[in-house]
Length: 184
Image (cartoon, rainbow, N blue to C red; front, side, top):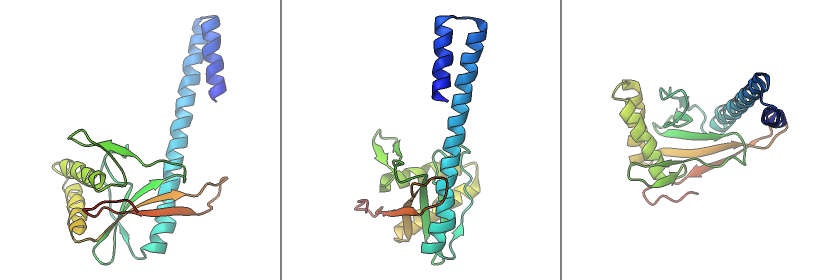
């Protein structure tokens, strides 16, 4: 697809006509669309690994919480599960072991990684802010915050193992979001 996009751009640069311009725009749109589909499929794979393998294996009987955040997935966790003991499992799902952790800018200008307490609390604050309009999201933000104070939150990253079109396992790591806050 990348080559097709380059060829169309090159053809338009060499001989600009309305036809070459149309083909260039169409090839760019097709390229963007294919990347969106690829990204969405990768995200769905990472979340499916968490839901169907990690949670049942490590947190049997955990119940998924409904996330009511933005459809684009920004400013929210990938998955939140309520454990039997009243604690929570908060999941950051990645499509593969090579996918890097995300980061965010805090209101004070600091940039923090997903594996930190500050990142976790930043997402909770975003959920609380949205909760002014959506009471269920406010409640979902309050419960993990309370559980965190009680030491009953497992904040994990799940990454699907490299594969060639079939499931081949996963990597899971728990983040240390205690007040001392070092990733494990």
